[in-house]
Image 1 (cartoon, helix red, strand yellow):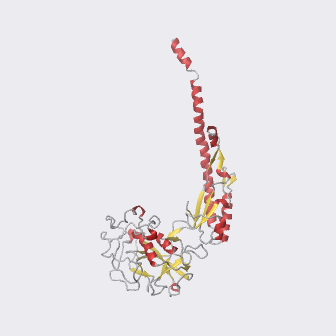
Image 2: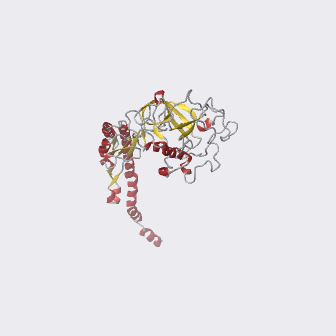
Image 3: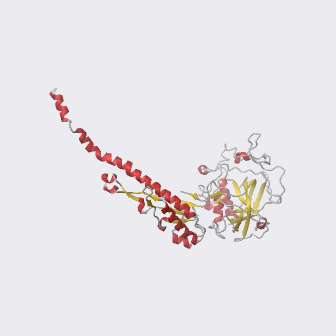
Length: 419
């Protein structure tokens, strides 16, 4: 009995020793919970301020130096209207935290550089990195390591105009207007009513907004390749001289999984369609009478709802039972899939393109070259049954009319936060 008592006596103070050994890890754990929790709150405060500042600045961008300066002023004021420290300290940014760029991905320029070249600056980035409020002292982590006396965080946002599916191309309707399901040919060869041919190009931005395509520039083919522009409606725009149609051919045909020349590495931005099969039936001249056996699709498989007056499905289109076929009903063969290496980028509907429809004043042959007024009355959605033709004569695209729409649509509001 005395031996047991001695053993129990020898263990006195063990709890105190264990607490002493574990106190530092416990403090470190407390630091993670409390200090990092406060850091997360600070990051959220700075991110909210950056989001609000970027949106406020984007509203001021007008393609002019005054818009750049106004954007900086608005962003700084809006950031200050937000606060950190649980609402006690306004978020203080300066022009050093603000940049401008031609795309949501940059390249970014400071205020001075943007003021000197404001035309292409359509997006604003606000990054709170480096401001005093991004650094806060720790309460517990410094006990573990003096190097952890401070932690830093930041918020970053990019804002600008939203982007819509649509091409900076205008076409002129034939007498009587377009017929759903009928194919049309739009060529850049001389022949009226647009100079040259029946297809024209324009800068798809509202008057006074930053230009998307500079006059005479070859950037037009890049925009056609991506297939997205600003969300515009009916109005008057400025014409642009197109690049040689050989470049346009390459841009259009990325939708069929064909990547040539400077576009060979552009599959991520110029996506192929999930179906790259060509449908060769009923190619007709633009001004020809409607063919007796029109091309047709089951529109409900391409977009929601049904459309009255849909033409019958042509025998050369895929069959999908009594309801008719669609280019998206057959995908079991490699003949329908993009080439190897491009499958992960494929996107259904890329062969459905949106073109602007010119008013009579744009279709009288006076629009030839850059800088001419192009009145647009609306837009039309078309399906590309075959690849564009960039060699021989005529050069152009065959398309099948789907439906008219009043304006380009996007799911984003007037201004969009990109990150």
